[in-house]
Amino acid sequence: MRWFAVFLFMALPAWGESVVLGLSQDEIAITTSFDGSEILVFGAVKREVPVPDGPELEVIITVAGPSVPVMVRRKDKRLGIWVNTDAVEVDRAPSFYAVATSGLLRDVLSDTEDLRYKISVPRAIRSVGAPMTITDAPSFTEALIRIRSDASLYQLQENHVAVDEQTLFRARIELPAALTEGAYATRIFLTRDGQVVSNYETSIDVRKVGLERWLFSLSRQQPIIYGLMSLAIAIFAGWGASAAFSLLRN
Amino acid sequence: MQIYLPIAEVSVNAYLLLGLGGLVGILSGMFGVGGGFLMTPLLFFIGIPPAVAVATEANQIVASSFSGVLAHLKRKTVDLRMGCVLLVGGLIGAALGVVVFNYLKALGQVDLLVKLCYVVFLGVIGGLMFIESLNAIRNTQKGKVPTRKKHNWIHKLPFKMRFRVSGLYISVIPPVLVGLCVGVLAAIMGVGGGFIMVPAMIYLLGMPTKVVVGTSLFQIIFVTGFTTMLHATTNFTVDVVLAVLLLVGGVIGAQIGTRIGVKMKAEQLRILLAIMVLAVCGKLAFDLLVMPSELYSVGAVGGH
Image (cartoon, rainbow over all chains, first blue to last red; front, top):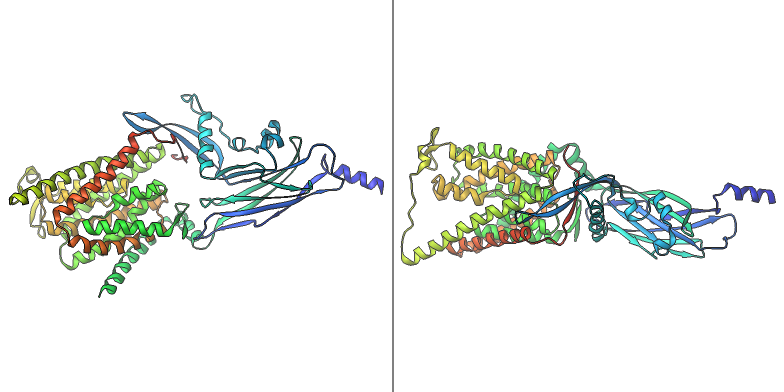
């Protein structure tokens, strides 16, 4: 019996703790009336040994939308008007990124671990190189983070994960209305003293459904038919509305 | 009621769109203009991406012009021959416009191009209209009758053609050029171009006023229809949900606007329209000249 316990202990990760996760929904449907959503991420820490002594267990939850390269442009005054002049391509930027933590991020995660797992918002963005003519490339990624944070697309929610008895945890992640489609990678990190002791990854599927899905796929796959259909619908709607109005008048 | 637009990928209030459509509809009914030049900037202001606003507005103009043309065809106030000549220029212009639009989109300068076009054209047209209607008001007070010059350099060009409905025998070059300019504008600015074509037809081509509106609407339908197809197939930026919402508001608004318009004098209407055009122009110019609060913008990686 004793040998068995030791064997189990060795099979588990260093701290012997792992995540059992629940999600309020693992699929988000963008319907015509979609106005943002909220997901509840909750779970428990499974361990075969008593809670270890020492630093408290902390939890970090990240939700990331699909990553695409984006172009960040800066305006400058030319001939009296403000025009886009410099541009830097950011190779990989998630369309949505939320980080929720159980404490202050700098307390629950060390820099090296952040670098390794790419957890904080600036680390989740990858910008390889800017053109030689641009000397202040970091200000472009900062601007990207600022603009997306203002639109609630990038969120850092410190002290947002509730942890009970170092075992149960839960957090709410708000998703804004302007969501794009794709698999949203959801990661849970358990940390002690800034070190990641266990992590778990799953994904939430965000997709357009019904009419939204149909119109979107049609516009990409059959653009000619979509264009003709748009014209026909618009002409019919315009003609119908004016006919209805003149009927109403008589 | 929030509604998620499938192509624009933003969520907006459906009543706001209906209201905007209605408001622009009232104005367009009052003044007899398409209203695209007002709607597209308003769509920018509520956060619709400019590329989607321009393409969708083209789609909406097709529909709102369609019912107008039916009415004009019934009254036989459409010069089909002139319409077709204008159309030839218009289609070439629209194709050129979309090419320029896509090229500048890749360079990240499309917003600037669209806004500069607006500032220049609205400024010139608004200014001319303002001066002209001020003079007209002054002349009617003095009791003078305005005279129109019938013969100018335009009548010396080759390739003459007879346009019976308009009672004209002129070269096809000026109408093709007018159509071309309007086609380019339709593609770049998301407007029908009536506000440029109508004055050009009256003052440049010397067409009788009664056939001008019907003929320009006829040309606009095909040019904006063509533009819609080009944007739908190259940029995928036509949002049919947005178009329908704007349209329903717009058609109802136009009916109300026409009724208000009948009760006002032509000069008063023109001067009001001129002031409105200048106001939109001023707002856009102000945005270009004053330092923006956010110097950076995020866009898709284009080109290739």
